[in-house]
Image (cartoon, rainbow, N blue to C red; front, side, top):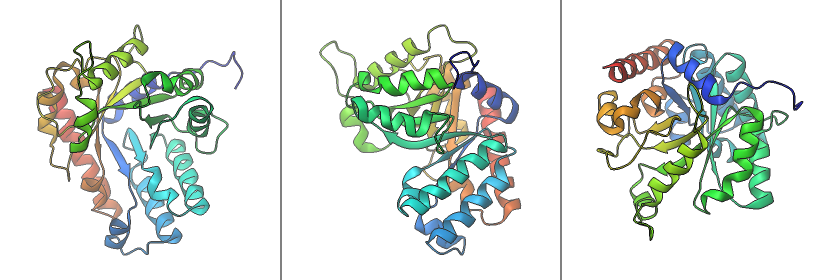
Length: 283
């Protein structure tokens, strides 16, 4: 990429996609039980058929896809090849892609992870990547730097919905601030001055209830898993996210995917979730 090439930041592109299509993010999670429920074998052919159907059904209408890399990587190099095609096809059809890989390491290894998903020359290049900051927020610097350079984004694990997360994320530092709040503060600093929205987001579970003790106004997107099968609803979003709700990107996976392989049913389910979320956010 030429250093003079203008790059539209992820936050700008995401805001435009959310405004045009609604903020729904649909997960692409081809786990064995879901493939079976679609009548597909738990093999490469089933993986390809599943991924192709989801993209063909929804890529022209949803703002964001979030493929879970692990469900492709479990098939080795052939599964990664399917993931490459899935990402390319989704982006070509107009959806943004957030790669859910939750990478986290230090130094040259973190730089290599960043290159795999945030370098435009990579076959796995995605619009954004989920990352883990629990080797210290500073360990993410190679990914932050490459994301800025390439116009990509990051979603940093901050307040996740799994019960085990609290023992780390709600631990209190010597300065009295929790680890989760510290991550949110780092992201707010990354996004300072960005318009209409920064490119460095947080993962914050929609099932967590009242989060008014945390400052979620990071001027960046909040990726919110938990809508649908995990128990949260669109109506819960304003109470959980407060004034930051306009920047929430609610993720639904099983709630939509269980309607496949019927393309019309997939589209109807995604449309229903998108309308419910749009109404809740606008209320």
